[in-house]
Image (cartoon, rainbow, N blue to C red):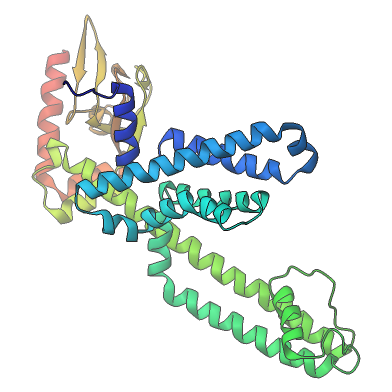
Length: 370
């Protein structure tokens, strides 16, 4: 008997499900599931469309169970089933697939059990682009962040004890113990200010004012630390990307690491779609361009010259003739490295060999154009 083969579309779907953390179908299932779970808590809407809501919830659950089984089988074939089950992604998949069925089997009321749909949101977390960057920032800035946390806790406990001492006689219901005053201290230090617990003694209000000002300072420090960390991490990522692009340009291939780092700091990266005008003839120029990827077309009298990866153009504006002599347009998606006039002169002074190479190529092009 011949073995029946699965349809190609199903095979591709299973392969994508096994190999990727989140597919488009998974994103759709998470969105539908969470939306239906929320709709289930609205009594009038649920009563009117409970069949559709229940059907969609079960459909999403069946998909996540299927997804979990496919990945489990895929990892078992590779001998990595235990690794997958103990990983963060495996734990999230397992909980997402089994939490609701276990709750229903255990006798939990269905509408309460379906609230566990919110766990499906965790499946989206690994696909968030900035999450890895946030983790690196938290690791690198853990010292300052923990220091500010210690300051926060110190202010909270000092303020709660002070308010207990000052307010316990006049407000025994709200400040009758340190734990009760601790709630007020947290609310005040975070500048939430519900207004349910307010000091009424003069010294109590002075302490409250100091706590509110301290709260602004503490959260300002946290914000500044995280913002600085994100900025440094973004600069580092951009530097590495530009370094990789610069190292692929033939004119820069022979430069040493320190020279490439110098060039990387000077160049700006520009990504352009096809048929974009880069240079217009007759305009003044103050920068030159290197083609890191893609292609550009240079419109010369009677002909068109195409420049590909590794070529450069616009150098005549930096070598004395500031007027652009031709139109330059992208022919496909193109990444350019832009070198401004001031940086060009500084770079040529630091690297004479590169200056000679560009000068020779520029003179050759000038003779061809004539």
